[in-house]
Image (tube, rainbow, N blue to C red; front, side, top):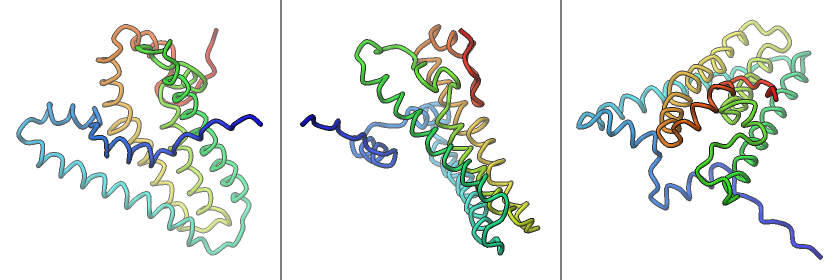
Length: 197
């Protein structure tokens, strides 16, 4: 009987292993270099902004859960969006993991699978998951549900314009140079687009 391949750890396990191994996130290292001696104070402010973002995201989920309509017309769409987001993020993570595991790809920019459609498909599908909560909150035309739109709007801004894409792309450009520039010229940053061959 053939052995099943070992299942790769989830994102939380991956981050815990990286932290336990003392591997520093390059984005925070770049902030430390940029901010210099003011790093502790500026990092505190940066983390407080993240706390506000977390509150808005939690409020979006809370509004979805407080919707008094047991099951409304938008709930099926919300479920479909959530399933697509989870499946898409898993597919993006899996493609990246396989790409990195192949020694022939050492020093290359990943453009396999969904990474040929978007430079950050994992961020896109993470954002898409947050789109489901306003749909749950608005199902049944609950008037307070409209406030849940703040969660995906803020998540989009955070990922696309603040702590997600910009620092990661600066790191990737420094690491891969011309290869990154060529990749960025043909693949959109966030919203996936079918690659033209």
